[in-house]
Length: 208
Image (tube, rainbow, N blue to C red; front, top):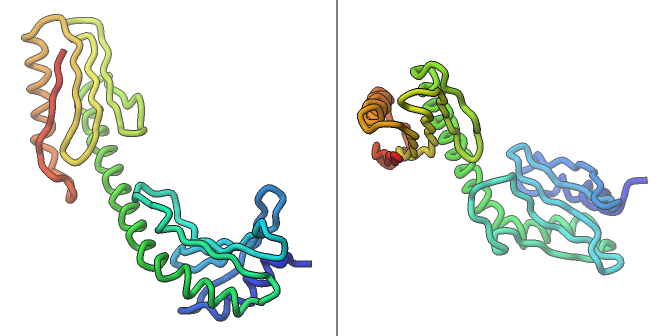
């Protein structure tokens, strides 16, 4: 037999504004819950409330870098016996006004972060391509390219931050070799067109 949360969500789904909402059952800590899901990614989660005979409805966002506060995540409770129409009304009037305003901002922030990550990875790949023996040693939180070889320049590490800002560290034996390496790195950046969201082409280079 379907859980009360699933029954309520199934009754509310065809009444939800805009249409297209479907219902999915899931379990959290042995509690039977339900989710109202829209093709655009919006999701309303329905779960048992602490009060006997009540259910809780709340909005859900994808993982994001957008700064979300409690005000962006409204929730509401109602007696389960009131039925799916009451659930739809509560979601429509108490959750969707904030959710529908915030959700596009979350998607935009995620898309911007995705583009920045692609640009950082591309720059890291170009650095590896022009320096034989270099490799990407870490991808998160930002790509880091490192070249290690015993000789005049012992190690070069480039951390690709995006937004036109990168941190490059040279561990060197003499200043002349380090200056040559920094010039080579600058030549790479000059041949790299800035990304569409870069604030500037400025680069900070730290040598030690």
